[in-house]
Image 1 (tube, rainbow, N blue to C red):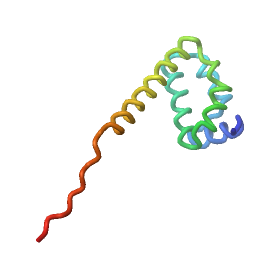
Image 2 (image 1 turned 60 degrees about the vertical axis):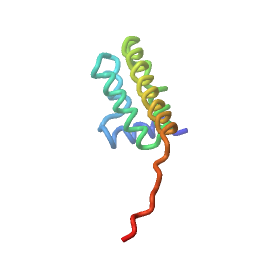
Image 3 (image 1 turned 135 degrees about the horizontal axis):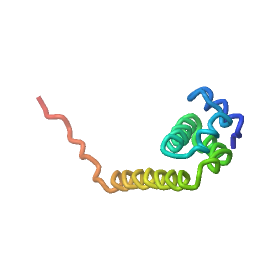
Length: 104
């Protein structure tokens, strides 16, 4: 697993801030803090999946007020449920039948 220094490097590269700079925003709570945390998670996920997201969660999630943590948890569950529904739908749809091109 990667660590906090790796998270800081990626956050600086992609969003221009470090965990230390992020903490006051998160501590304030509210929609802005929740959206910024999700944005950080998304940037880190795109860069290296859970290897970078996990250290961010360990370092900063508890800086959020309880209400913001609850809202984020609900939003993340919603994302997971939607992704699962999409995968189930893909798995249950019949495969398209390939037909040969008409003869000329």
